Length: 214
Ligand code: ACO
Image (cartoon, rainbow, N blue to C red; front, side, top):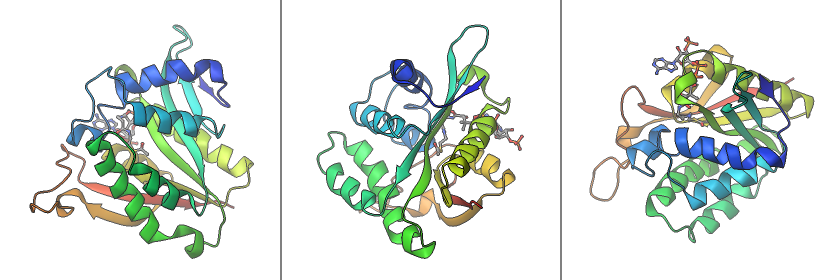
C-alpha cells in the first residue's frame, strides 16, 4: 500500500529501513563503502529527516506485516539551497559523505536549473529505496508515480532527481523523464588520477533527470 503524507511517528522506522536498505546499497554509497548494512550514519540521517519534514514523501507498507518496504523521500529545493548546503558540507564529519555530496551539489550548481527553467522551487526526489526482499516488483515505479502526482497537486513546475542508479534511470526514462546531464563515473577522477566512485555494474553514469509538469 502506497501512503502519503507520512506523519512523524513513522520517521524512526523509515530511518531503520534506510540503514538496512539504502545507506550501504545506493551505488555511490556502496562505491565508497559509506556504511555496512544496518549501520547508522549521522549526516545521511539528518539529510533524510530534513527531507521528510518537507512533507512530500511517500512510503510503501506491506499490508500483511505493516512493515515499511519502500520510500521516496522528496524535498523542496530553493535557489540558495545548494550554495548553503555546500558550505555546511565543510562541517560534515565523514570524508566519504563529503565526496558524494560535493559531487552532487557541484553538478547541480553548474546546471542552475532555476534560471534555465524559470522556477523558484523544484520538487526533488532525493532518496528512492526499496527493501531488498521486495525489489524487482515495480515498487520503486509506484513510489515515483505517486511522487509525481504529489508534485503536480502542489503546483510544482519541475520534478528533478539525481539518478545515481541504473535502475532508477530506467524507471524514470519509462515515465517520460529526460536526462539533462550525465557523467560517466569513471571520468570523475581525484588528484591521483583514479576514479573517485568505482561503482559496481550496471551503474555507470550519474544522470540528472527532470520532468516538466503541466
Ligand atoms: N536487476 C535487474 N533489473 C532490475 C533490478 C535488478 N536487481 N532491480 C530493478 N530492476 C529493473 C526492473 O526490471 C525495472 O525495469 P523495467 O521497468 O524495465 O522492468 C526497473 O529496474 C525498476 O524496477 P522496480 O521494481 O520498480 O524497482 P525496485 O522496486 O526494485 O527498486 C531501487 C529499485 C529503488 C533502485 C532499489 O533497487 C533500491 O532500493 N536500491 C538501493 C538504493 C538505490 O540505489 N536507490 C536509488 C538511488 S537514486 C535516488 O535515490 C534518486
